[in-house]
Image 1 (cartoon, helix red, strand yellow):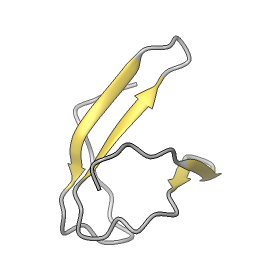
Image 2: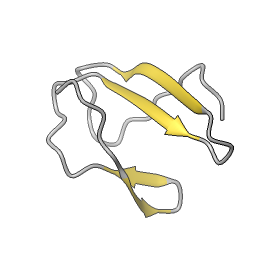
Image 3: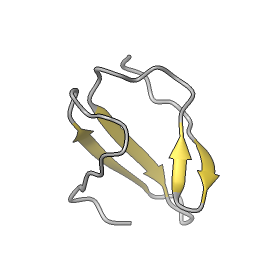
Length: 60
């Protein structure tokens, strides 16, 4: 999939998508309260697994 999708907050700082994303690298686009948008590309590689954590050089 090459489109951006809206995620929903599951609880705390955990977010979820109900889409099937296995086998895809994951990028994240975040809109801040001041309206600025930050984008972190390819944060998780296509071989990611559930339960893993990843870091990015984007801070918000």
